[in-house]
Amino acid sequence: MKHENVSKYRWVILITTMPIIVATEMMWLSFSPIASVIAEHYGVSTAAVDLLATSYMLMFIVFAIPSSFVIDKFGFRRSLVIGATLTGVFGLTRAIFAGSFTLVIISQFLIAVGQPFLLNITTKAAANWFPFEERATADGLLTMAQYLGFTIPMVLSPILVDAIGVQSMLFVFAVIGVIAALLVIIFVREKPAVPPPGPKYENVDFSLKTYGTLFRNKAYVLALAITFISLGAFNAILTLIESILLPRGITPDEAGLIGAAFVVAGVIGAVVLPIVSDHIKVRKKIILIAMCLLVPLYLGLALIASFVPLMVIAAIAGFSIMGAGPILFQHASEVAYPAQEGTSLGLIYMMGQISGALFVLIFEMVNASTGSPVAPMIGLVILTAIEIPMVLAMKESRLVQEAKAEK
Image 1 (spheres, one colour):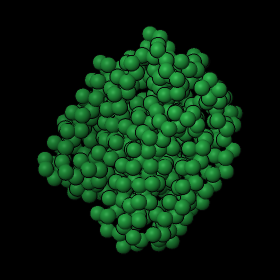
Image 2 (cartoon, one colour):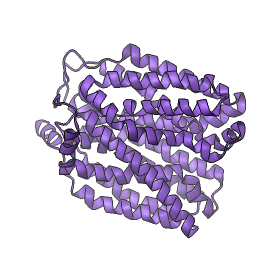
Image 3 (cartoon, rainbow, N blue to C red):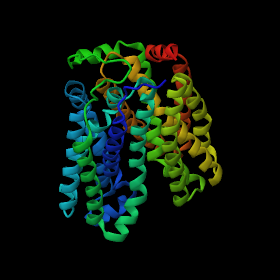
Image 4 (cartoon, one colour):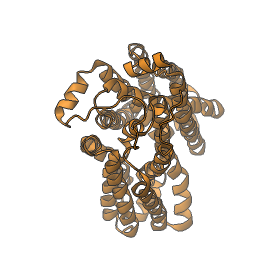
C-alpha cells in the first residue's frame, strides 16, 4: 500500500541516525579484539581491560529507564542528541588522555552512558516517521547498524593498533564519533509535518505505573521472556566463540572467521527478514521459523569439529537470530501499544543486557566446572527449544491484524 503523504525525509532520518549507532558500538568493542595488547600497553591485567567492555552492560542497566523517560517525555531526537554528544565528546577525551588508563576507563564509562539514549529510540523513530507497513524494516536497518558496530572494530582495531598505535587508533574512533554526532545534531528532526499512517501512541506521563502496566500485559511479558533467552544465548555465543570452538581443534584464526560469518550473515538477516515481515505483514511465523532452525544449529556449534560446516552453520544461525531480533522488538512494541515505544523497547534492551551478562557468567562457570564447553552449549540448545512453545503461544498484534485486514 502506497501513501502519498509519507515524508521522504524519513530516509534521511535513518541515514543520519545509523552512523552514531555504529559509532557507539564500535567504541564499546574497540578494545575487545586487542585485549592482550592493551593490557601490555598500560601494564594492567586483562581483567582490567575487560572492564572497558563491561562498562556498557553496567551503564545500560543503570540508564535504560532514564533514557526511556527522555524518549517518551521529550522525544527521540532529544535522546539522540544526548547520546550523540556523550559519544562524541568522551570518545574524544578517551583519545586525548589515552596515556592514562584511569582516564580512558572514565571516558569509556561516560561513552557507555550514551548507549541507551541511542539504542532505545529505534521503534520511536520508526513510529514517528514511517507508515506501519515499513516499521519493521526501519527497525531492522537501525538494528543492522548495531551489528555493523560490532563487526568493524573486530577487523579495524588490530589493524590500526599495529599500524599507528593505541592513541592514534582511539583518535580514529573519536573522529568517527564526532562526525556521526554532528550528523544527528544537524539533520535529525523529531517528526514530519504530516504524521505517517499508523497507530498513534498516547502521550502518557512517564512513571513506574507504566512499567506495572507492561508487566501485567501477558503478550508483552511473553515477548520479554523470549527476548531474554534469545539475546542471552546470542551474547554468550558471540562473546565466547573461541572458547566454544578451540577445544575441538579449531584454530583461533578459524574461530575468528566463524564468528565473522555469524555476524556478517546476521547483518544481512537484519535487513532481509524485517523487509519480508513488513511485506507479508507477519511477525510470529518468521520468529518461529528462526527459533526452530536455531535448535539444531546451536547443537551443531556445540558438537561439530569441521571448519567448513561450522562456517555454514554459524552463517545460518546469525542470519536467523539477528534477522529475527528486530522483528521481535517491533512485535513487543506493537503488543505494548498504547504504551510509548521508548518505555517498551528500553525494557526489552535492559533485559537483554542483563541476560547477556548472566548467560556469559553461567556459561563460563559451567565450562570451568565440567572442563568442556559442550555442557553449557547443550544448556543453550535446551533454552532455545523452550522458546518454541513460547513463540507458538504468541499472537499477532492487533495492529498487524488490522493492517492485514486493510491490505
